[in-house]
Image 1 (tube, rainbow, N blue to C red):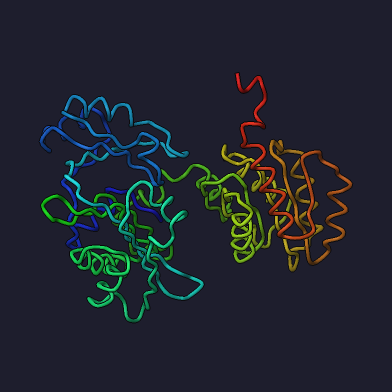
Image 2: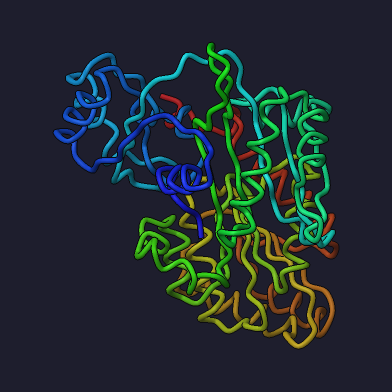
Length: 388
């Protein structure tokens, strides 16, 4: 359950974390009035549950109320990574001296939380983490101990944050534990020219199992979700959309997570997490293929199944039957192993669909899917007609 930025800042304020004055509206006319109340010059920010708003043009500085109205009119209704902007937040601008990144995230594999922090926050934090990982501190946090004053000071020192950030780290931990959160992130946490430390942007992901305790957010916990995730939920599918080009379908959360890692290791980005669990009927396969292929960023699809209770021949039959109703527009790489794998491979071989390829190992399948996606996305793969 992801919260909108304006909801995250409400929680921050509740726990004593300083944020700029701001107000959220759903019309351009209201944006003008709010800008007047906030002093005229404001930052207009799209409210969607995804990252990359700034680079997509969803965050802009407006010099006066008239500009705020025009900017809000342009941003409202905008599509950002499949999310339609229905609200904008107008915030007072801040004289920034330095930007930092801080977050707490659940580390399921280690059975603890992880504090992630950097003295180089802002829009390019992903690039910093990828190209200079030493600039991002990752400090394990024992849930039983939590973030004490000493732990907060340790995190701040490891990341090169100013001592004034340590109290914010303590308060963010309280947000995490008291609000049933799996992720609490501030990017950027800033130091102003006057030395104040403010949370300029925030992201909070709440635990689905705690939904009954989070009724105060009403329909906002389920409305305005990614449309593909909403469509998948209606079909009873366990689907999470990511920002990549290789669609992933597998059986079992552990296998799917491993597949995501292997695809990433082959130089491609997973486009989603999708676990079919124990279901491999034609309807299930038609549903999963239609959802994954509906993502415009997908250039290839990888089906990775280890047959146990779900037999591989049942998966193959499901794929073949599904292809009678689902138009396959991207190459599909299938790796079947385990129970009745040979029979499943034979079924796919006999169907001989021109866009379906097979691989015998997970590594081999990941390499094929990554290569197909990379080839499709490269300029050289663009046809002359498309290029014109």
